[in-house]
Image (cartoon, rainbow, N blue to C red; front, side, top):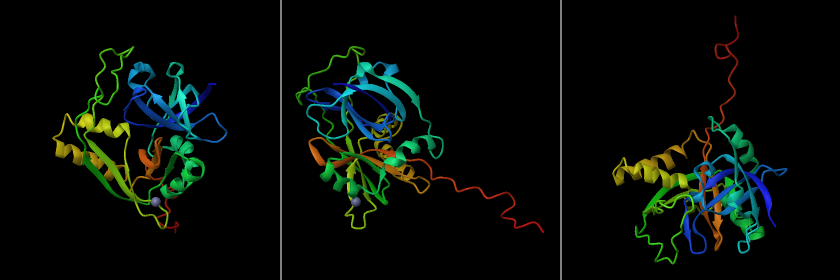
Length: 272
Ligand SMILES: [Zn+2]
C-alpha cells in the first residue's frame, strides 16, 4: 500500500552502487505533513536518472508516493516511486537559517551517544544533534579502482540519459572525529557521505593540485562548517546492514543567532 509523503530534504548522500538497484542515492528529510516534524529516509532514489527539472536540492520540499520497503525494517525508511515526485519551494538559508531551523530544531537530540542508545531500544536510525567538540577532520586515501562489472553490478541503461557519465569514485574517505555532549563520551569517528563534500572534491579538483584540494576541503568542512561563528549540528544515520554503525550524512551550519540589538544610545549611558 502506498501513501503520499511531504518532506523537507535535509540530506543527500553521494550515489552508491547497489547489486540490487544499480546506482542509487539515499535521501533523508523531515516530514512536513505530520502534526510534528518526523524523520524519513527515502531509498533507493535513482537521482542521476531523474529529469533535470525533477532533481531536487537540499532544503527543498518534495511530495512523493512511497511504500514501506520489504527488507529494510528501520522505522524511518520508505521506498519512493520516483514517477510521482512533485517539487515544491526551497527554504532559503539567510544567515541563521530561521525557516530551516524551525523544522530541524524540534528534532534535535542531546547527543550521538543518546542516538546510539536509542537505536538499541527502538531502532532509531536517523538523528541530528550538536557535537560538543569537533576534534579533527580525517582524510584517508581509498583505492581508486572502481569497476561496477567486477562488483557484479550490471550497467544501467538510463531512459533520460543514455550517455550519462559513469559514477566517479571519490578516492578518499573523510571523517569527523568529535566528542558529543554525553559526559562519558569516548569520542566518535564517523565517515561523511554528504554529496556536497564529494561535489567539492570533484569540482575543486579541476582547479587545485591534490594537496591544495585536500587543504581547501579541510578548511571548509572543519574551519568553516564547524567554526566558532556556526551553530553546527550533524545529521547522522546508520547503515541497514550495520545498524550500530552511524555515518555523518550532512551538516547543518547556520550562523549563531544574533544577540538582541541594544536600544540606540544605550552604550553611551542615559542622557544627562
Ligand atoms: Zn558520544
